[in-house]
Image (cartoon, rainbow, N blue to C red):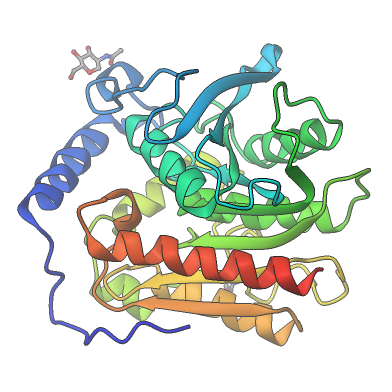
Length: 336
Ligand SMILES: *[C@@H]1O[C@H](CO)[C@@H](O)[C@H](O)[C@H]1NC(C)=O
Ligand SMILES: *[C@@H]1O[C@H](CO)[C@@H](O)[C@H](O)[C@H]1NC(C)=O
């Protein structure tokens, strides 16, 4: 599984995408205060939200499900209504974690509502998009706890109106950027736990957000969307004080957890963009999965920046869904 597009010197993005990225960067930069807090009221202007809709839109109906009101933990459920010809075929469950540096965005953000709707329709899967708590108001490990508690909730069969052919033994964790970091750590916890019905069999890590004290070559060279200045601020808002080489971000470094003994750690696909400053960390992650004896695949998008998948106008965003569909079918078939 490898893309064959020739690499370019700079990313060629349509104007629409460039302008959106510029506006987002300006507003999110302005929202970060030097005292480490975030001006959330300013972000309302760029984080436009979509309501859930019981009437199918583009072949998918949505509803919001509360997991724990005391910490406002909920998820948006996406159920495809256009069944493939063999309508009794089991639907995989994809638990999805949105990106945003652990600080920004939500499961009801317009952009993520649209991303998960596309995934539910094109992958013929039930998608659970987790609205985890955000930093800096809630720091590590709140996000990982929220993600894992959603898995327990699903395992206890608490999702209302889940289609009968939804298959809890065919669960994938997926996420982009900080969401992919989260998906990794929730997958690790899941592989150390016993569930009644739920089986996590695959992990889709789209441009995962990892880092460390060290500055990699790609971090020094690239600053589109993700820059060292921005990620430094984000890690500071998320991690315990002064620990930039924490195992949850320097995930494959010398202090890394040993996952080689975790037999249930799922097959993983890692998606990398050639204009993403984080790519060196992501390749290290892939190498570490392999050297830990795990089934892992690397998908390269040489001409893409960080976050390209949220822009449907980019052909690569559609290609990614096709490749994720191939991965899901392959893993599903190997578990039969
Ligand atoms: C948040 O940003 C807006 C726009 O810049 C500003 O008017 C407002 O005073 C800020 N709020 C706080 C609490 O800092
Ligand atoms: C973080 O990881 C890199 C290798 O990926 C390593 O060079 C560095 O020493 C690590 N830092 C710590 C403290 O683990």
